Image (cartoon, rainbow over all chains, first blue to last red; front, side, top):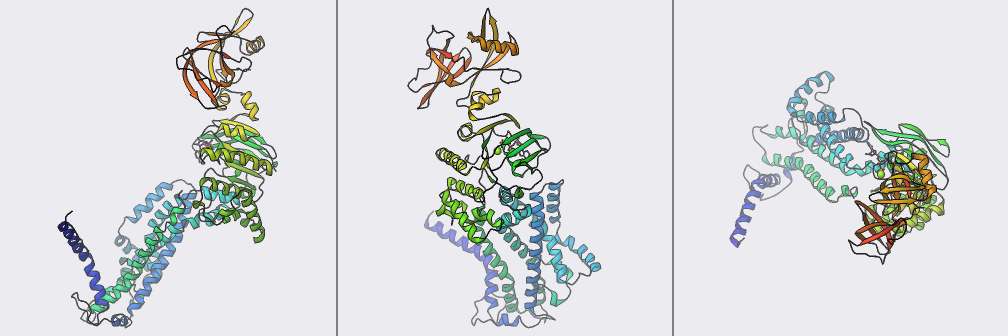
Length: 273
Length: 365
Ligand SMILES: Nc1ncnc2c1ncn2[C@@H]1O[C@H](COP(=O)(O)OP(=O)(O)O)[C@@H](O)[C@H]1O
Ligand SMILES: [Mg+2]
């Protein structure tokens, strides 16, 4: 490749990158700019004033509450889903029973149904159960939505860990369950962490369920809360939306960096020989 | 030191794979007992039944004459070395060895003392701080042995523990394992498909095929008195030669005929065969390569043949001699490397031949 070719290639890369990065760049600039507007510009007197303004109420709730609600919903859903998926995957991989494969297929096909289709029946059912407009309601629905994937991932993960280790442990003095808890569980930890984080990210970003189930502003999670910034007072506070967006994005970015590091460290590689 | 007894053990895997077929065995105190047989013959399944990792479909398992058939592995107080060694990947060598003791809630200083003692015995003291994947195959093997040894189990079960080592290390570990077992006098059931391993290590061998035990005996017995064609062919390297022949009586002499050859056999042997199957019947002659020698044409019972393949092994040479359409392997001195195609005369040591019934495949004599 000639010099011209290299320059052309770099120019092309810059163009592609800008296409993806400019919205992100706008968000970062605007978040720290007290006079942010719809145009892309570097803040002349950067400050944290937009973040401070997130402590002021919009309607009945303070935006920070929405982040907190999201944290509660996402971590509870992820934990519940991971624990339940582990129990299911244990039974599916360490015991054999009739209809095992049919069950797996069923789990996957459930998950192929769009969320919006399930959301309405959930809302109707919740009416009877008194779960509408509660965080528990959202958590329960998210857990159910995550579960098929979580089971599938953990099933694959546990299958990858030879049962010989458990057998060795049983001979060394463990009960069947003890062998699983003492040997296989620690070996499955990377898989559990991965499932938890993926579940967290799903719940964190899921919009449809809370949109339908939650009616009170103080119980709203961040994904839905973003809606309330738009034109509540007749005008859009770009700086505040940008600041909120950054807070909303940070946990997800952190999680992906963590997963990457975790997988690169190759804890999974301990098992394979 | 304990005894192990299997009583009519049968294991059928669904839908109907008969992995172990009515096996009864008694393993004595402190004995080094080897289960020998080709891959898939049910050795591992038998061992796992003794360990309690599989439930037999029928039959009972006794350890020290106590019925343990329905006990889980942890209540049987036996140790096992797996073919893949199965060291816990997330634990250091020290914790791997200490694991059985921790489960028994021994005091910390006692655990430490015993781990270090067994590590010293197996010369892995400097490896205690490593993870299993940081060890070579031979080192992992020692750690697996250490974990099995550390709690003085009633018996040691080993499933081809040397098969994942390279050839040189295997020979070395063979001797070391045998010495260790004799020193500690632990009742040992050792599974292998390698007949050399079985011959060199065992006090007694059970030869298995297709889920059945065909013969139990000392290495000497199974080598010199194979009760079936299978046992004769499985033990020894190169294996026993088998030749189909017709048994007959000519005047006062008993003869075995095959190809264009007619061998006059000792009359005592002839009478024996006559009593069992009668003259004119088909038999199978079994003869080991070391019981065939080169001869000269004029010798009685000399068989003409032609050198087909020569396999020099260094300490000895294996000659493949073609007699008609039959190829016979024989062992000769290392210096005797004859050209292919050379015409030779060979002679069977007729006191060492085995006669089998081709239908039942069992030994007649
Ligand atoms: N869990 C199992 N399910 C079904 N068949 C099995 C199982 N384990 C072993 N077998 C079958 O039983 C037979 C004996 O196996 P195994 O005891 O492992 O033989 P070996 O150790 O002598 O090679 C084989 O045909 C094998 O395929
Ligand atoms: Mg095996």
